[in-house]
Amino acid sequence: AKKDPTQAPAKILDDLVASTPGQEGKWFAAAKDAGLYDEAIALAQRTPCDPRTLSRAARDFAATKPRFAVEAGLAALRWIVAGYGYEITGGPGQRAEAAFVRSSPAPKAQRHPIFDAIAIFAVR
Image (cartoon, rainbow, N blue to C red; front, top):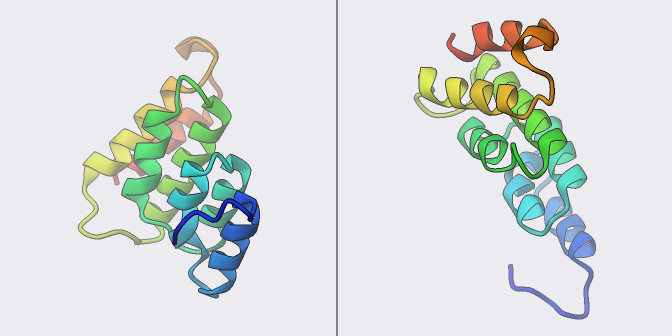
């Protein structure tokens, strides 16, 4: 889809999402690239989204948008565990887990046990 200077990015995204019912997750990257981070996460949580795309987002935004990175990492792990993605190996899961852990503001000793649980699922 081309940019339309007369339309707000959120409106364009809404139109794209409406054009593909049941496939909202495929618009995660477009939302992210438009800076619509909350919308991107909402889309990734609604329908399957490629765990590799989510893992890269978690990695790339760990330092600059840690909340977004954590949510993208969790979504990646969710879809990996649910069996989505092509030939998912430990790599994407480990990257999602590593980005998730890096985005935690707490030192390792103070992190919530959920980080350990995610690490277990990430290498599954």
